[in-house]
Length: 331
Image: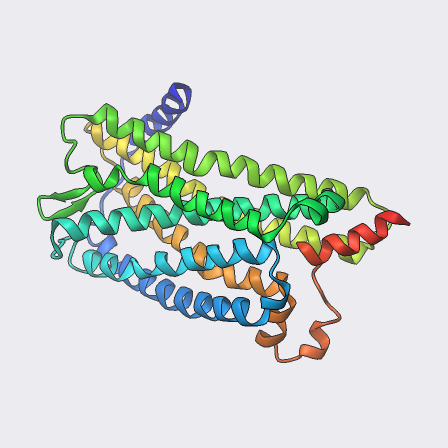
């Protein structure tokens, strides 16, 4: 962890030497409309996805559906935290809802961000097991196991996010993450790095390793057609790009921006970049319904008007793909 902090600090020091001008109205003019659009799209898309998963997939309630439902619920809660942020930024970051609401908003925003990351990881591991180890998965993995893991994810993420209920609060009319730790910068930095490593880096490695294993096995199997391989590669590529763009910049810029500010060398462009990265993290929840449509046939059939053609273009990922893969492996 010390190595990570040292590396990020050097990056921040290099960026801090750049002489950029500030645009004080950036957050007030740009962020509220971005958050507003993302909130509307995310709520509509994820509520529709949840309804379709519960109603259309109830006869095929496998582990992938369990994890996907939890991810949808997390994204909905995540979107519901945005109205307060929209009001906050539209007022020039003047918080009017009191100290208690500030603590709850910061906790819910952070908690649902990392819950979303961890369920993406769970879905990737589930697909890895279903495709690479189909016999083991069908014999030993049951939906009840996914439910137990889901409960653990919610409890674990809530636990590592709970310090924000104490750290955060009002600081000069602003809702700050560390209002109650003014003289403990080392603790602030340690907690940020801890959340970056445990909340993002570890799931990032597991997610990419899982999908790399999926691609490795799929492309080595001669019984799988070239079209099926391309479909799997497309979904894997979309998930990896989405993960990288949404979460990695947010954590890197957050840590670097904090280090520069604590050293008395704030950089306005870096600060604005960090705010944009928060919007990119929110963009992730808007795009998840597209992935659900690609993975679950029932959702795709409802969302796409040409349902008769959709059935001929099935993307073989998850449990359905594992069954096809298992049958071909026997040949």
